[in-house]
Length: 500
Image (cartoon, rainbow, N blue to C red; front, top):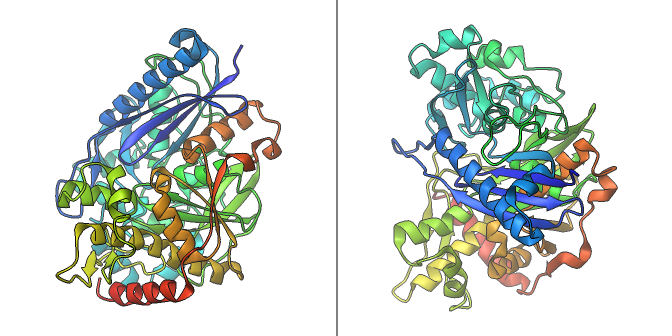
């Protein structure tokens, strides 16, 4: 009997695995962190072997937890897995040797800013309009294409090998497919391909014009399959039998949109992870953004492609980690909420979390974080409160931009991700937006989405109607703050952003 699903959620700071049954009840879950590498200011790297170790350990722990729940052995749980779904940090990229299976050096992470100069040069040369039209994206170091170009120029011999097709430039999902399948398969899906600057919005294969612009040989790019396609089967994976189909891939934010049941146009979600990401479904049409949001592929099921608009805030949960690790004003991430609750507001302190630049709608990679309005009576509680305000204010800016592009305000926002567990942050967000927020009991919506599309791929679910969210498993947040407080906060934040 194969009636269980395994979701692999490979994130920026850790790997999470979930074992779910066909009712999408979580039977086992585990998260395993892995190291971050910062070789130079503005540079962020991952070692794929460390990622892989975290994935296999998370699989082991999730199977063990599920086995305890089911009163059986982990091997028996593994034999019941019908399919594996993958979701991943999207723009992080590296090269894999097709013969040896080894990853060349470290991966360059989506947060990395080393290609800022290249992006600026391409903008000066007038290429951004073409980039926006063809890919729906902007010229920003965030995306994979310029990272690939950088590696081709700076890693000895890599360009020659890429031109011969001996190495492939892969986002993390494709690297996981390669490793899970024992090197027998490698491929990505449109939700990830559409984040590389090398994939045309209308699909049809890697974009020759964009490859030429960035100097990326098409021979080094992996195959692209529909999001619910089969991406090979397991081979020699610790703790798993051979032959389990890898039957679904979605980039992390698209997986959260899918996991939150945002299948209809104009439904929206915000995921609060390391960064925060707002995405709204636009159906079967691409919507060019007037507000410098991203137009992207949400998913492709069979031959049908669904699109979305997305806005990104690069620092969300990472702000709390910074308060803990760099300032030392909290010991654990969970301590930020009780500390911030010690004060009724930030007492004029404004925090712009631009540590890694500002994303949409500002797109200022040169911006840096600002904390202003500090007086002699400012305490660490005020700074903690201002940090939560800053996270939520970024999302308010993004939601304003969404309303411009969609043509009307979004009236419901589904929220998920680790930082969404913070009740105070969610209430601040509801106060700023003045709309209803729905938070599911199960906050791992990215992994939930990966499991859902894998189950759809192998036929455990008949269609999208089987994947609708349950209203009895949500917490509701609505505005409580007076409008004048919200207006004052937004004016002060806009002023501070101009100084970032």
